[in-house]
Image: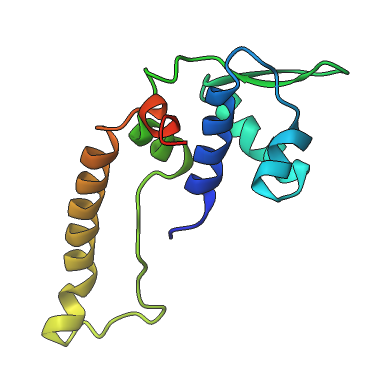
Length: 135
């Protein structure tokens, strides 16, 4: 299902790209996002796992962008936060004796696959640097 995770991750990476080579504290990032620093650190952990950022602890610690903003596409960011977009399925098991019920989930799978391919194509055309330049 769709959540705000992509927007949060993109916000963090945009901030980091605007403060190139600086270590930003989770408190600084959280202030921009207007959210708890603990939640920021959770998202940063995912970015570290994907080798996009590095962090250091201590008084002058924080997080900074490890990769070039020009080399990171919005599709890369999307794939760090989601495997794919799913708009959902019915909570009830469809009636297999109904021609629609028997095939609805497969048809939804096909629709979602097309949707994901289109999202990926469009997001791959925009780099983090391009996006950050709009601010």
